[in-house]
Image 1 (cartoon, helix red, strand yellow):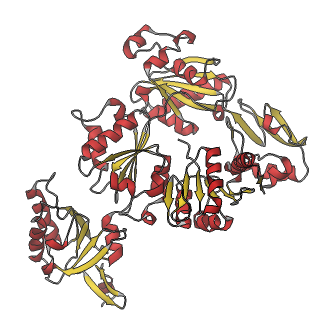
Image 2 (cartoon, one colour):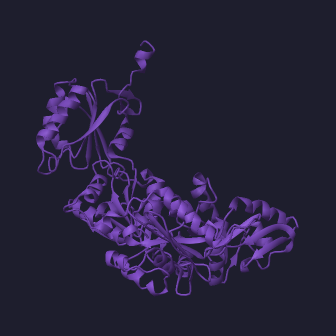
Image 3 (cartoon, helix red, strand yellow):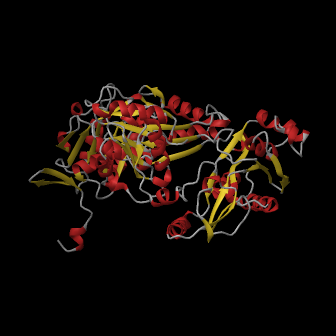
Length: 592
């Protein structure tokens, strides 16, 4: 999914312009709370919000002073080839300034906005100004094979050399001609200083289960060589939806850096009349007379030709179709993706950039409603599937089935999704043969991204209580037998671990925390420090310290993490207040 631009409205003076820009781009407006009257989502701090959007990969268009956006994203700048565009539009809509990502779409966005507003696009990149074109930003349907060479070629052209342009590259029509650098646009292998590839080829692939990756790779190379097509001219890899998780096919798509497009058997069968190879055996087996040729033609379009008919090895088949013009919109569906993300305990600054990016890329959000609400503007404009507290299995199954339909889904968890959250349940459902999920859901890509866990957040607020060996124990006996929990409590107490207690109490569960305290008192001092951390990262956050023998269950609720120190943990009495830490043994090392 292409990440949608976001338009920022910071003041009433620029609010109407922000909405005009949003209409031009089909983008949402995020408004500063209390400063504008109408928006699709709201934020409180402009710098933090612009930074979050940029980190998530959203193109950012701010109707505001350029300096606000520059200060917001400056700490994150590292790779101009990967960073999203950032543009500033004046409050009166007279000037559009592409600040970053000029050759990653910012200049095109600026021109589009300027045309719509009747404004001036203040483009400053040398190539656009002097030559009327950015060599490293070809139009949709083309890719630059060697972007690292663009800077040198552009410098030579700016110095007065003319280019030797070969092939059909209409956007380069005004480039000065001469006997300087060779700039080629070709689907065939070619030698040139700068090489553009029209996206006209589609690889159709089929495979038996667990086809060797190197076998498929060799077959693909053979097909491309026979067709005289460079790998960079491949627009997509295509196959039957039942092969959406086939490692050999996925490896080809990754190696080429191209999307995988999938079709059901009925859609592929509609292509059979134009195919060179048709099989009744395959038809009876999977519902279509062929896979490789059919899939290639399905993506390449009605006017495509079959450049290489099906070739096969022991476990793989491949075919190549050529479209008459570069492909921009690709038919079929993507392999579904489920991103299992932990957003941290609460505050946005604890959310990792990778999690923000996965959330931005997702078209659908699934999760406990409160957790999705914590995303604030990042959830705006996305399809939401809110679930109440509890019903975790229904939540995970729903997310997997949505991804199985080809959607890009984010399953939103608090803390870290793999620590007492939904991560393990997702894989359990995929692994089950009974009461699991559909075959389509089992074939989705699952991406797990780490988050700041509650125990990490609590430890950071306290100081460094996890400085030595520690463990986490959930005191919920809803899924784990009580006797197993007690056994783990005794083991942790005997091992003198620092212990983070998750799910310490609920309205009905009140006794296990008291029992845990009593077990621990048999193994560590009564004055062992205990941290009670509630509502971490939220406005109502509360940090309290207690002695182990004074730990009272009535001070603890469902939003509290209880961190019990080991026999070596202590509180440092500092001017700013107590800080909890567990020494690792450095004092012994230096003889103290």
